[in-house]
Image (cartoon, rainbow, N blue to C red; front, side):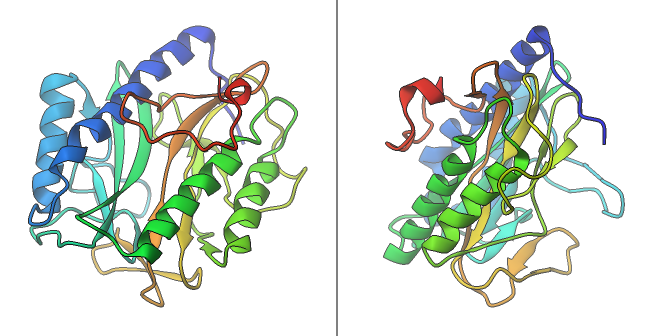
Length: 271
């Protein structure tokens, strides 16, 4: 496994790409209303990335080994869809939960982030799942510092999610990111403290837990991309890109419209 450590100059490039990715989510939020289609959302995001930000949408035609090219510029995963949902012409309805996953390429650097949105008013169960998944992500982020291990991140997420009666998807994980969309290391959202790779300054990776209201089992749909829960239970996901600093971490995918950082995160560790 070869992990590419980023220089100060590299990190500056990543800051820009990551902030732009987050700003796409800021831009699209007012459009998330009953009746809009995910294809319309995809076009709005694509045009904003290309025409306003002068970015490249990384998912468009992305084809990792064994996959056919992804046909859209963003991923839109609804309700029981876990990840990699492909935008289509079906209108969103009141009560839907929606994850939008954005990856921009700016000056050769990738910025990767996702958020949950509720279409109109969502159920108490859907809101609770989204909130606790957001907190689970931050429980993982909170572990990031030099000398910690990737297993510490996964353990914190798993303990928190399972402690609230939810399950953690294991087949998909966070990943290193930089000039490449997916780099080493893999960042599992479950695990044991003190195990796996030790964190050092200059590492950049995503933390993006997928949490299910029911069982953790998943299946792939016939389109070759969309992943759903086997038991049709709700799923939620949030994603940030973080860099390991000399003293802790920096979240690169924050923007003016980002949701508030949880109160259990102290300002010192969030810096």
